[in-house]
Length: 100
Image (tube, rainbow, N blue to C red; front, side):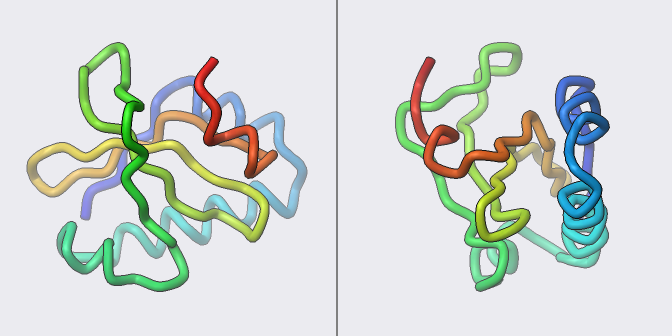
């Protein structure tokens, strides 16, 4: 699977603590080894989940979350290809699921 990073995601990773940055890198490496969306959904550690009612404003794509660490989530969306686009990083797991 191809992995793309939105500029906002890169900035949030840059500002994150070192353990979170390492976990993001490890997750990106893992995502690049996953062949397709069905395999992504079946991967237990990533906890890939569709979040109903969340749409990325710039593309209109459905938002999903994947687990980076036990408390950190990444907001992402999918594109044909298969490509996963990492949109934003949420260091506080519970707040990631709230609409602002």
